Image (cartoon, rainbow, N blue to C red; front, side, top):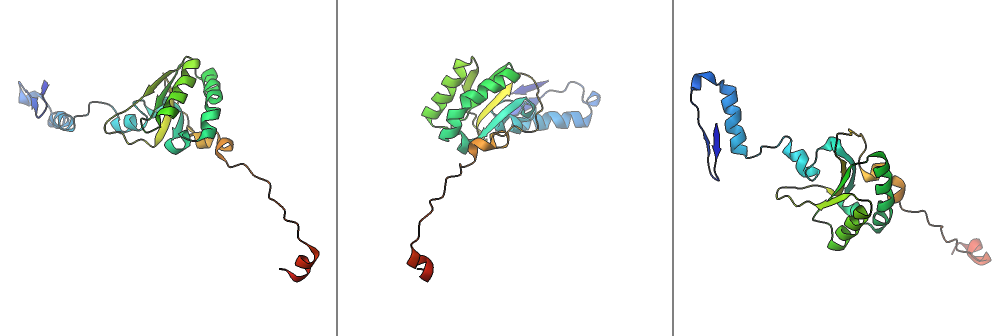
Length: 171
């Protein structure tokens, strides 16, 4: 049995000979680390969900872009057609206006949206869209799934007309 208080982890052992040493060491290490979640780093990175549930992850800097904000409701609608039970998790590092825009878009599609602020989290993502079950997708990054949206549009080059003497003398 383990008792936990704010400073110490107390392990009570009735019969020390019945417990293998590795088990006792694991309990001590677990108590010392304070983490009782499976894969806590992965959970912090994906705002409290596991990587195999993630269907779309948008980097923080991409989530703030106007072009992504404009296309996101349609993308979310397409994802919802494939994965019926979706949730949207947002980084607290997004601006308030951007968070509100994404939350409003999710609510129109009846998708739960949450701003996740975990103390030790250092996630590179601004948005994580995940399912309620494991999907195990190879590509989840917005930049990989929708490169055409993030790619700068080719603008026509302005052709400067050069006069006869400029062509002749090269000035």
